[in-house]
Amino acid sequence: MTILLSTLNARYTHASLGLRYLLANMGELREQTRIQEFVIGAKTTELVERILAHEPTIVGFGVYIWNVEETTKLVATLKQVAPHLVIVLGGPEISHETNGQQIVQLADYAVTGWGDVTFPKLCADILHGPKPLMKVHAGVQPPMADIALPYALYSDDDIAHRTLYVEASRGCPFKCEFCLSALDKTAWPFDIDAFLAEMESLHARGARLFKFVDRTFNLNIKTSLKIMQFFLDKLAANPDDPVYAHFELVPDHLPDALKEGIAKFPPGALQFEIGIQSFNPVVQANISRKQDNDKAAANIRWLCDHSNVHMHVDLIAGLPGETVESFAAGFDKLWALGPHEIQFGILKRLRGTPIIRHTQAFGLVFDPHPPYTILANRDIPFPAMQRLVRFARYWDVVANSGRFTHVTPVLLGEQPFANFMAFSDWLYANTDATHRIALDRLAALVGKYLQQQGMPGVAALLARDGHGVKQKASHAGQVAAPQRQARHLAA
Ligand code: SF4
Image (cartoon, rainbow, N blue to C red; front, side, top):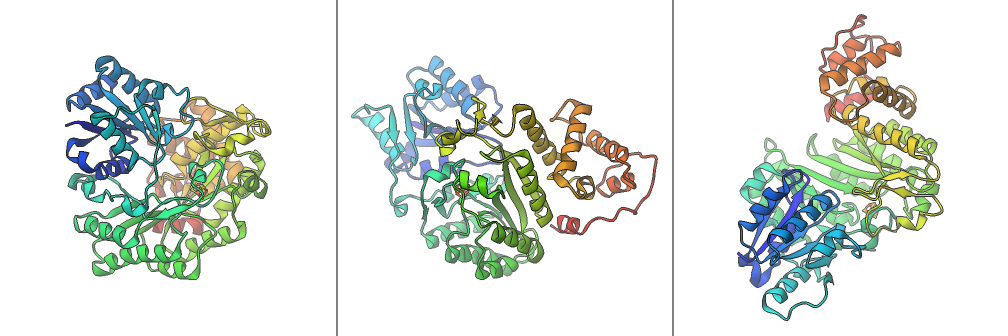
C-alpha cells in the first residue's frame, strides 16, 4: 500500500466524509490507497506505530480545528521516526494562513481548499515525477459532476455504528464574517438524482441516520423538497422502521411548500440546526449577516407549534458590537420561542474568516491556541467573557442535556438569561469546576440552589426529571410543568 489517508476524528462515531471523498477520487491510485482513522486523545507513539505498520510512501492528514494540535505532534514524531515518509496536509485548518504554521513547516506538502482532484494529482507527481516544486498547492475546484461520490465507502460497520455524513451541496452564498463558508460566495449542488441514488443504496444497506453537512438545506426549495420526499417515502413504506435526518437551515426562509413537507414528518425523524447567531441588527450588520429577524422568529415559532422537528438553534456570544445586555435580550427572545435546545457558542476566530477586520475597532482578543475562542472584546472584558463561557458549559449540562426538562423552566423563570447566569455564578462558586460534575451531584446542587431561592416543590420537580434528591419540603405536584416542556418531552 502506497498512500494512507488519515485523520483524528473528534469521536469514534464521526466517520470522516473528507477522507472518503479523497479515496473515491484517487483514480488510478485508488487501489494503492487506504484509510486509517483515529480518535483524538490517543497516544502519539501508538498512532505512529499504527501508521507505519501500513508501510506507506505518502500519508495524507485531514487537519481540523479539533485535531490540529495532536496532528502537529503526530507529524513531528513521524518525521523523527520515518524521515523518508512524505506527508501531505489538507483540511480547513491548513487552507488559510499557512505561512508560519508549525504543522505546515513540518510537513512536505499542503493542499488548501478542495482536495478532490489536487490531492490525487499531487500524489501522482510525488510518486512518478516530476517532483512538485511548491509546498502549498491551491486546491482546484472541479465541476461537481466530475467528483466521484464517496458513499459506497461507508463500511457496514460505519453504517451500523457511526454517524453518516452526507452532502447534497457544498458552499454557502451568505457572508457571515465569523464563518469559513463566508469565503465560498455561492453554493454548488451535486446532481440531486445521483445523490439520492447513493442515499437509496445506503438506506438499502441499513443506514437510518443521515447527517447533512450542507451549509444551508433550505436554499433551493425544489431540492429540499426532493430530499424530504426521499425520507417521507421511506417512512411511508415502512412506518415501523424509522429513519432520521439532520439538516442545517437559515431561519428566515421557510416557504409554504417546505412547511407542508416538514409538517408531514413524525416525531423523531427530523432534526434542524438553525443559526440565529444574534438577534441584534447592529451586530448582524457588523458581521454582514443578512437576516429578517421577524421572519426568523415567526418560522421558529411555527416549527415549534406545527411540526415534530427537534430544533437546535445557535446563538454566538462575543460578536463585534454585542454587549452582554443585548446578547441577554436575544437569548430571552429565543427561549420564549421554544426551541428544544439553544446552542450557546462563544465566538471563535477560524483561520481565514473575515471577522478579523474588526479586531482594532472592537478590541477583539482571541486565544492564540485552538479553538481560538474569543477572550475579550471592547464590550465584554475578560472576566465577563469567562462568565459567559461558564454559562455556556452549564447550559449544556443542565438545559440541553435533557436531564432537567422539568427543572429548567423553573430555574429560568421570567428572566431566563439573568436567572441562569445567577445560577451559573452560584454553581461555579460552589464547585470551582465546569467539567466532570457527576449527575447526582449536579442534581443535588440544582436542588440546593432552587431551595435557597425559596422555590417550592423542588424535590418533586427533580423527581419528575428522574433525580432522587432528598429535600426537607415536599410539595409534590404543586409546580406544574410549563407548556414548553410538553414539547421537550414529546420530542
Ligand atoms: S453562518 Fe451559515 S449562513 Fe452564514 S456563511 Fe456560514 S454557513 Fe452560510
